[in-house]
Structure formats: structure tokens, C-alpha cells
Image 1: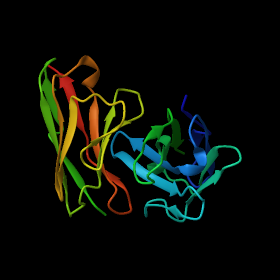
Image 2: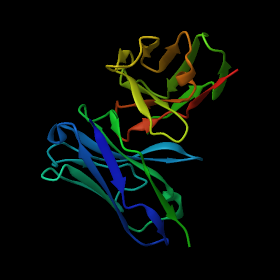
Image 3: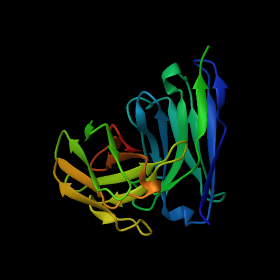
Image 4: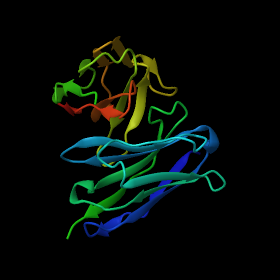
Length: 118
Length: 107
């Protein structure tokens, strides 16, 4: 049974950091590209980060580039999103997703809410 | 960035009806388009990729078509579980982007 389970969300102040984790099981983790996607009521779905199956490549949109870092631990079937210099506009539900094709979102977690507010 | 505009933003239909949702890209994306379904309070589910390839396990009443800049998701013989929000997503180039969403409501 495929599972992706996020953790680490919460309420934080602007300018601070937070790390999200996604523990996975039930699929060939080392063959999948791994993403974080966020969703807000106002802006809909937004792709946030991608790490390739071999960890050699990471990709980000300009909105988070330089602030967020995606990483993976293939020995633990787990990946992470380190979020630094958080802004109120980063407030969203963050989903971890996995893709064998790297550029679609085949498998999803249940989401974790991040609220950035003073 | 590639922008995807979906229409309509919402549509009402009855059980057993057929509906179509369109997604227009602001530049040519070939067939690098996927469709997702999202129920209330749930994560999205991948339905179609490559514009027209149904993901394994997705009912055959769903179909996708199009290439270039204009794409369509069609659902025939609507079932209760089909009433949800649908999003398109392009994978032609980074940043990966999603459409604006279409909410399918029961009439």
C-alpha cells in the first residue's frame, strides 16, 4: 500500500524557518522524482520543489528559490523541505508528491498546513 | 512561466450527464499536460497524463484530448464521486504550473 505522510507543519513567525518531512512506503522510492506542492484558497495549486531520483538535480520556482531546499534520504524513504525566511504568502497546505516521470504528480500525501503569521 | 487558463471556472451537471472542461496554455506545450481531480479536503488525484493517457485504475468515462495550446477533459455518465474540482498541469517546462481549476457541482 502506497503511503506518503507529511509532518512538520505549524504556525511560525515571518522570517523564521521550518522543515517539513515526508515519510513514504509502498513504492520504489529510489526510482521516483519527489516534489512538494502547496495550495492556498487564493492562488490554487503551486509547485514548490523537485528533487530528482538520484538527488543530483533540484528545481524550484522563483517564488521560493534561494529560500527553500528540497532533499531526500534514500536510505529512509523520506524527503524533506527546508523552508527559510518564511513569508506570510508561504501560508498554505503543503503536499508531498512522487512521480516516476519526474514531471507529473502521481502519488500524494494528505497535506500539512503551514501558517506564517506574526 | 506557462499560464494555464481553465474554463468554465464552475459547472453544474446532473448524474448521468456528460461534461467537458477546457484548459488553454499561453504557449505551445505539445502534449505535456495532465489532469487531476480533487475532492473536498483531499489531495489531488492524477487522472490523465500526456494529454490523453488514462492513468491505470481511472474509470474509462474520463478522457482527455488536445495538443499545442488547447486541451479538453471530458467526463461522460457522471457519477456521484465525480463532483469535485479539476485542475490541468503542464510539464513542458519549469516551473511546472497548474490551471486555475474547474469546480464540477451537482445540479
